[in-house]
Length: 53
Image (tube, rainbow, N blue to C red; front, side, top):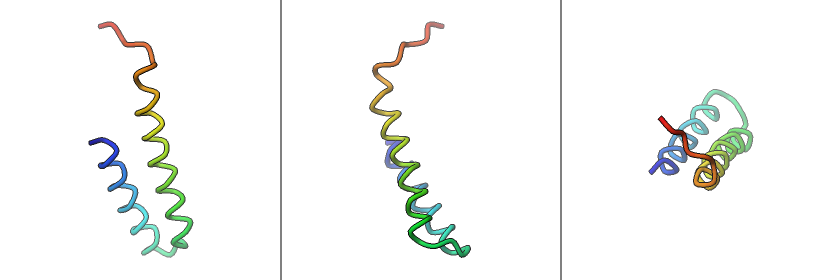
């Protein structure tokens, strides 16, 4: 669910950046980086030590 929300936010950001005058490819790359970071965090999260509270 988190990746879907991240992808939706990245697409919305791409549209906003494109509408404000940034080139569409540059906005797409920024959105792509956001989605890749989210996917990487999701893949690495099981291997991180758990916090004890």
